[in-house]
Length: 116
Image (cartoon, rainbow, N blue to C red; front, side, top):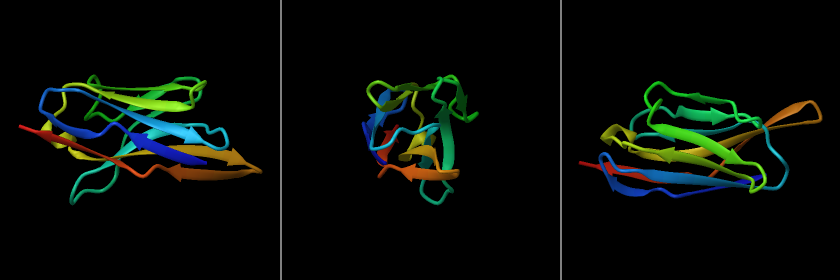
């Protein structure tokens, strides 16, 4: 399984960005977006099941929307009302279960920078 994230960039506070993560290889289950800011630990931003059930970090709830198109094998993160503190490298993540084992996959990360 390979994950390819894209869509990051430099925006001003209050603006929007939409990240994408394309999955290739085997089918995956729960997918998620994580982020890591300089000097901070990686944190979960949002996750989504195959059936579309979602979960968000409190810091982004109401501003970010996670979605997935299973036919296109793509997950999205629509980010509205971006704040300076949203600046981070965003990583997509996917889980897969096979032969009784769980596997965890990561994309390469895409930089989101929010300026004032």
